[in-house]
Length: 160
Image (cartoon, rainbow, N blue to C red):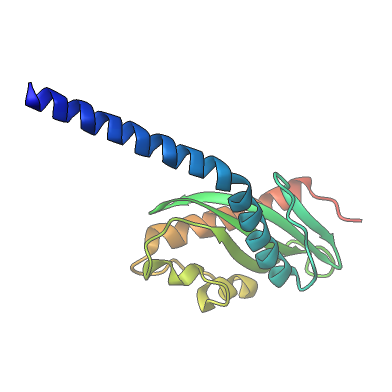
């Protein structure tokens, strides 16, 4: 009988804690969304060199000043990631001007290649990008995502 009472008390406690966490998550959901959008806007503005507003669901973020910025996505070793690819629209049309990772779930240490300013990400501008030993799955997934995004630019994007 005592064990049954303990189970009932623990169940009640867990239900109360779960309800409190759900309530708190609902209170902070809008702020978390705003903070993520602000962080993405900073990343995109850094990539473009001008202020870029990241609207929710925007796939093509910029198409001016000889530059187009498109969202891309892929799946690395740690899971899904999102990126932005800056592509030249004028002279040298279709060449990558820069890549920034917006969001990822890769293992710290291995994900250093995904940080803004990382030499590996900068190698996309030179057009010679190799997979990175120790982070082969992730680096190959990013390479593939950049190639898909660039191909989508060639097929679909017209900048005036």
